[in-house]
Structure formats: structure tokens, C-alpha cells
Length: 183
Image (cartoon, rainbow, N blue to C red):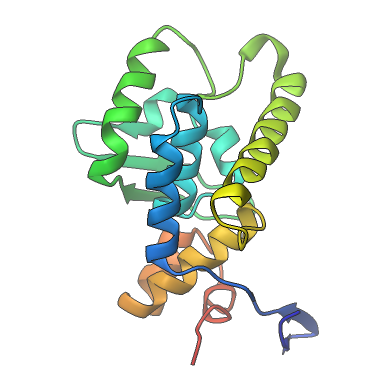
């Protein structure tokens, strides 16, 4: 699956079975309509589709990283990723506002119970896996969070320049971003 690209001794697989922005937005809308879906999963999906976040980045999000007044979200950098400040979409704000208000006294990570971090991280992975099971019922093309992130980055490259997308994706090296360019 995917043509191998040789970069400095690394064979990197190009992303395949990508989704269009329209497909992902439709997925978000369909998923959000489902009343039995809890708010945190809707928010996580929105962050994957609109900000291209990875599951790890979602786990590390803190309350104060979400700047509702400015409609922005801060993604802290790690050894492997760059820090970035991204715009939130209008469609994400009501859900986020509600969730933040309900959890306003919670310290630390947004989706993790602080007392039981290891269990909570596993729990987030389980919740994400469960979410993808639900998403596949809405669209059988859905695979996983990586596929969504690849689709988002590829979509960004159609409308933004390489350096902008490198920043938005949190890639330390532009070579990581350029492999998503579909000629």
C-alpha cells in the first residue's frame, strides 16, 4: 500500500486511501448528529479533522491550550513535533464551550483523569478505537486516526504553501511535509 519513497536512507510509505475534506466534514457532521455519542469523542474527531491532531497530541491537550475567545488552540511541541497555534472552526466552538464549562474545575489534561493517568491513556485509546468502529459504520473507507491526519495534511497542501503546512502539521522537517504532496 503506497509507493515507497527513499529519503536519506528511510523508506517512507506515501499515504494511500485518503479522504477528501468534504468526506471528512460530512463524517464530522454525521457523527455529531448522533445523540448517543459523548461530547469528548465529537471534540476529538473535530480536532483530528480540522486541526490534524494525532491521538498523542489530543492526550496531551490541557484546558488552557484552548483559547475560546480567540478561537484558537495551542498544540505544545515535543522532541518530535513543533509547537503551533491553530484556528478552531466555528462548527467546533459550541461543543468545546460546553465541554470546557462542564469540566472547568478539572486540572491537567483535557480528556484524561489526572489520578489515573496510565489507565486514562489506555482509556483514550479505547475510546478512539471505539469511535473509529462507529465511524466505519458511517463511512466504510475510514481506517484510523493516521489516515485522517494524512488526509488533512494532503488537503492543506492543496490550498497552503509547504512551509505553512509544515507549521500547521507540527513537522520539524519540511521533508516530512513534502511527502504528502500529491503531484
